[in-house]
Picture 1 (cartoon, one colour):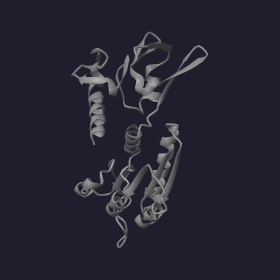
Picture 2 (cartoon, rainbow, N blue to C red; picture 1 turned 90 degrees about the vertical axis):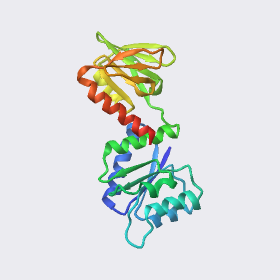
Picture 3 (tube, rainbow, N blue to C red; picture 1 turned 120 degrees about the horizontal axis):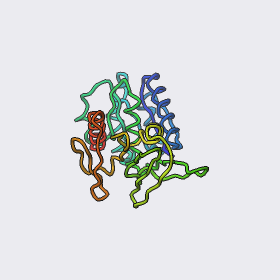
Picture 4 (cartoon, rainbow, N blue to C red; picture 1 turned 90 degrees about the horizontal axis):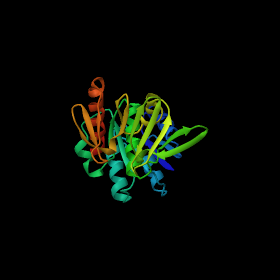
Length: 245
């Protein structure tokens, strides 16, 4: 269960963010509760009742004479001594970095909000909170099997078959389309489609070279298709940057 608070005085933005979060959590099969507030004072009054939130999306600019998001964040951290809640600031402006440093937010999103950026924040939170339990499912005949995404090193395609290479050394073979599997199950996780024959889990990449990458399992080298090189490098560094924030 993930309990979320959205605090933004722009009703349309709050409603849209709530809708996007519901869609994301449903896709990830994560149970959730979402409360929406329209002022910092309203959120603070709720927190004073000992309400608990795992993830807080907090606007910075509110109407004149109202608490701003920075003040609310400091109240959460200092007055309530809450250092566990992950705070994600949202704003039309980009120049708040220094003011937010001591609050240690999980991330900072610029309005208008982008669905993919929100997805990245949720993924980041899930990993930090240890709730990242995405499952990969596949069929053999009439039987359905599943493995944890985090245990997949890479997916290989040959002939009409697919093979999962797993962290414990197992290899699971089944029929399917690597493009369909990537789009339907792996793309929303940190996996890279590097070649028509390979999808790789970012967590097991030890080196990105010009035309290939090295993996953690004894240095396996997998080729990167020429027409995918720019896309792969862009996505690789986007994931790296996001995880370093």
